[in-house]
Amino acid sequence: MQVKLAAVNRRRALISCLAAPLAAAAACALAGCPGAATTTAYTPVTGILIRSTSLVAGYGCGTGAGQVYRYAALLSYTDDGGSAGPVTYSGVSDCYSDALFSNLPADDAGSLSFDLTIIAWNKTSFPAALACDPSDVGEAGFTACPGDTPDTVASNEGTPNWITHCTATQQYGISVLAVCDPLSATGIGGTDAGPGDAGADATSAPGQAILVDTHGFVTADAGTLVCGTDFQSVRATYSSSSQSGTVTAECPAPLSIAPTMAGGAYAITVELFQSGSGVAQVACQATASASMPVGASCAPATGP
Image 1: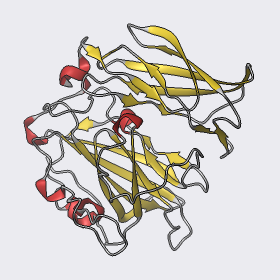
Image 2: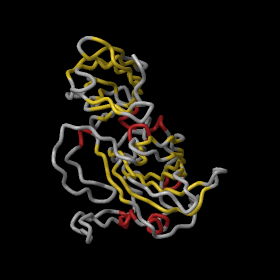
Image 3: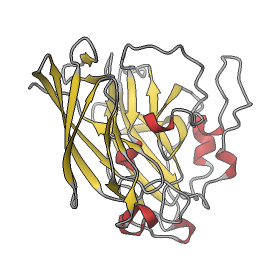
């Protein structure tokens, strides 16, 4: 089976990566991320965010045949009718890393809406040609990764084990979550692995912690609730098919749900408090992994 991608051109975006809190030391898998001073402020970046925990839910990250190793995103502008143009931006990310395409300009028609194709590989199928060399630093100080060039990704269109499509419309001042269909197997690489075949991450084995970052939460009106200014403490009520419970924390310490069951899908309701009074609620979700902690994906905060 061949995965058919749209025609491509060589325009590039400023691509960043958001490693999950547990993997802060991991290498940037999209474009190299320049060093930045540590700050306590939480400022959402204008851009389109792909949450890895949601993307690989049911599969998990790892080196097994049924686990996601790395994934690529290819972005095309869409017109008012929803039709996608040529692929304009791309990037390759490690499974455990969120992908952020930041500050994308509007196209010639003024559109900020995008169609995204996500292709994913297990470790055996991942093309060596898309591996990023951290030592290859370009003039702007970013690592020049092969996956940042759409036609390079497209030249490996016959290799991914899974594929899905997403949509997103960039909005100023927030990182908009891409809305994605579940990954589906392509049949390429000798595996038709589905969520039930994800190896250790879909068993009843003990899982690693699920973490909820509490530095800040985006609101539905494009604002931000910031730790220390808008709330002081947080409480998470969580449930899965086999577990439920409550954990609390003083921000900016993360909420940690542990132990978990590997492969379990967790629904999490986070409540924010200021001086004992409820400020807002946030709905989050995550799928526990047997091999590493994962960060929860959260929707915009709503009223108390």
